[in-house]
Image (cartoon, rainbow, N blue to C red; front, side, top):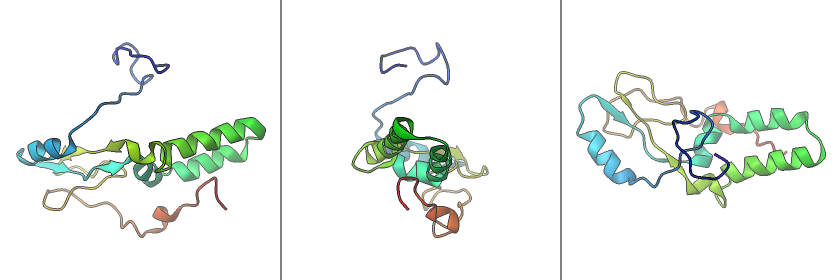
Length: 132
């Protein structure tokens, strides 16, 4: 919270949790558990784009002007651009095999679980708010 170490249970939802994770070890361990679907690790920027951050950021930017708009678009780029945080952080999901995939993630081949919509679908080609 405020870029300072904090107890994550002190104010749930108000602090970001960041950890260095060995995704390969996590994947190997999860595959040993029957009935668990494992998503591939996904870069933060790609995951956020799949969740619709571009459309949301564009919609919010429509009502902004000047410095507020510039700061908003800079924050969007910082979170999604591969040269910034977009490829630095990653996400992975472990879900019950019978459950739908975690939004924006899909199970790895060879693990049970439903597949998400095709990435070539129209949702995958949402315009980015900082580009025409």
